Image (cartoon, rainbow, N blue to C red; front, side, top):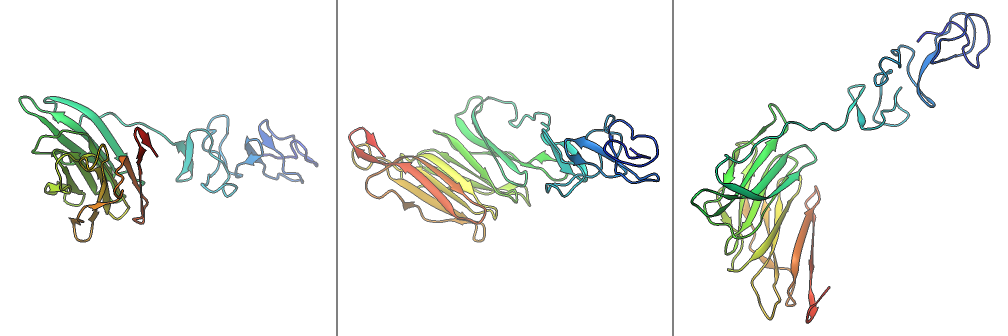
Length: 278
C-alpha cells in the first residue's frame, strides 16, 4: 500500500500512512511497505494483505531472500505461497475381483510411488500384485503386476527416483519382479532365493534403479535362520547370487535401507542363547 508520508515512526510532511503500512521516513511521497507478519516486509508493489495475505510480494525458499516468508502448511512455489499438502482423489488399483490384503507402499523423492498387496482371486490362491504411480504427465497408475504362482507370505516393494520398481514375495523360496517405467512393463519372475522355507523378504532401491533384497533362509540348527541378500543391477538387469550375511549364528527380522548413491544398510537380530536375541 502506498504511503505518502512518514506513517508510524517517520518524520516529515504528508498525511500519516494507512493502517497496515509502515512509514519509510523522509518527505515528498515516499513509498512504504506492507507488513506481512512481525518483522517480515513485502515489496513496494505488494497487494493489500487484508485481501491477499498469502501473495504479499514475492516469496523465496531461502529464508531472508524473498519479500514474504511462507508459514503454516504452505511453501513457496513460482513466487507464491501455496498449499504444501493436498491429497488427490483415491484410486482403485486392483481389478475389483476377489479379496485383497496386506497392502504396502513406497515413495521416491521424485514423486514416483509403488503399491503392492496380496490378492486372493475367486476360485484361486493368494497372488502377489503391484502397480506403479507416475507423477508426470497425466499422473496415472501403470500396468498391474500379478504373480502366476501362489504367495505364502508378505509382498514387499520399492521404487527408485526414476520410477523403476521391484516387488519381492515368498512362495517356497523368494521371488522378485522388476518394473521398467519407460516401457510400463514388468519383467519376468526371477527366483532370487535358492532354498525352500525362505521367508520375510524385504527390498530397497537407490536413485539409479539398483535394488537389494534380504530374507531369512530355512532353519539351520535349532531355531537359527541365516540372513541372505541378493542385489539387482540396473545396468546388467540381473540379480546376484544369494549370499549369507549373518554367519553361522542365524538371525531374524531382517531390514534393509538404501541411499541414493547405492550404499545399503542391513540389520537383523541374532540368537545369543536359548530364547535370547541381540
